[in-house]
Image (tube, rainbow, N blue to C red; front, side, top):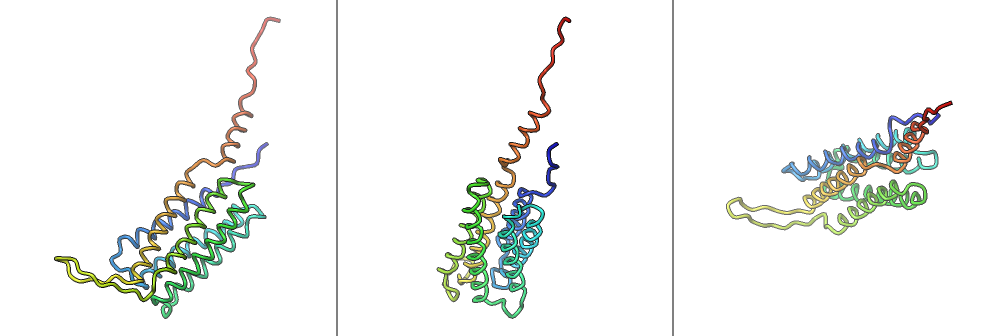
Length: 216
């Protein structure tokens, strides 16, 4: 008798993370205010929700030897969410510091976890490597953007505006969450190798040899 299928799997973790990332991307995209306060509010909600899912997934989804990355990622997400909720820390410089540290740490953990999983689960390894690389790219891009950057420009008929470092940083966070949302959604809806193998095994077990009647 085959073991009962889990009601909460890696697929559900990916889809939940995709939903949180998509909501964050939409909030940033449709917000006219890209200040540090708004950026921290969206970022804090994103990493807080993701952190709870990852921590619970460590026991519901992960194998005993693979729980470390879920726990590590969840703890870093929750710590980043708490840092984002401190009112006195919601400054431009603090946004750069918190998001860069978070992106670098989580990106490195996912990248290492993906590289280690290549021999056991190729699909999960590819997903982790891609998300980890995206996190490291976000950290690198934010390191390049000066926090005090300001560029004045004018739009005929609309007035004068200023493009600042924090506007660019919050926009980059929105771009990152949008890409992660699309990638994780595709990964979550794609058939996994273990599910295909289980379906094939079930089909083989239920389809026995056809008995034909014959004359005695």
